Length: 570
Image (cartoon, rainbow, N blue to C red; front, side):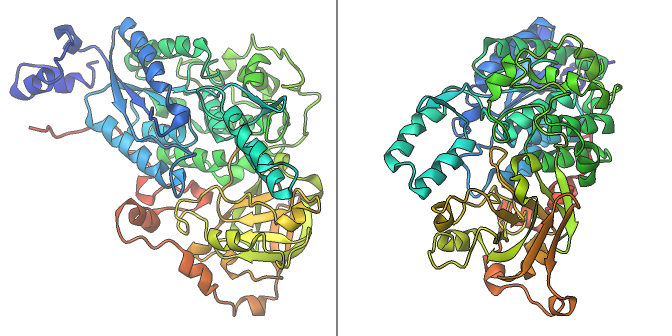
């Protein structure tokens, strides 16, 4: 079978000449003899600090491609720095996926190595790869090493929330808080907690899309570069074998990811990302699969934010494979990896080396972990909660709503000493969904009122149509669908309405008589705060984005188009 790139480079015609000649800047003539050309979709950027080291990783991928007889080609793609971009990186996940898909389809490449790390980069790259369906393999950038402050480890993200709340509560000085800043980020790499970046790097492997054994390798570990080399070589083999995302990413692969998400205590953001990736393939996966398949899975990994340790502890304790070996009976034995072999075939040699970090199946941290999907008056399309990160005493709760019509409204009033709020109150923040913000930002884990912090309160029930950081914790109901900006009932809630949360029953309800509910109008302050862009990507996004319960992808991007390009450029 001829390579796809040979359609551009093969022959003696004018167009083939043009395609070859402009690439002959050091490449030998035999680079165009039909051998596979492998793109390296590289999200390195100085403005995506967690991915800044991926240029070095790319160099090692190149060596592996050359060694295996391919031609490596660096392809910078849209990079999204979670900590940097406003209003939220999620606004551009779909754009990054669309741009990467189009570039891969339009260029003379036969396969691709996907380099990501920071939260949205791996999901976007997997969405792109699924849509264009060229042989693809992920090299996750890996977590940073653990920093320390006041003699204790720091979990980036999680400890930002904790330390900042200490300042607000008056138990940590601002000067000490500022001093912790240089200790928080010790090395290259993404967050070292079980946040979204760690979760998606690990789940990329569970999905079968990485070299087995690489996910979770710290970014500063030289073994990551060794794996990058091997991944480049494997990409060439995948082209020869025509091993594409559509052959790897099956329903079984996604259900394996749901099992792993629970056992790892992974980020709730994985729900919208896995749904979006599955949507690009036409694989049947729904929000309810996360509850049906994952809710009975034990939590085995004792990592922040749900536990004590950090990602380099997980790596030394046996890593992802040691976790998966404990739940092997729950995994689809036929789901394959980019090697062509089933995922479960790679687990035999795995062992737990530190049972404090990775618990054996018999002694889990939590018997039934996973993500719970709630329905009810306030969430007819569903909402999610992560019980492992919540306070057990709040998983069944009834309390009066304290409603905020926008993020700005929240920040303006949350610390007002006259705010009518008690520890039993339910904080409701709306207008933060895909359309409303826009982009569904990580604001659902609302900071608690200062006056309650001073009383020692450290958790409350919170309800929001946005997301929360995978590094966050607390009893937070999020991804409420439909969002307020799409006409969801969250937009009708008023201060004082009694909200009832019952996680065991999978319910989120409001105690308002039906006849009164039918007469309510949305809050004018809320509707004024909804995004109303007049042009550009934001307008396209707001007009076409779906809801959280289907992955928040753009409607016209679901499904795939494959990689044929019938027309030439000259």
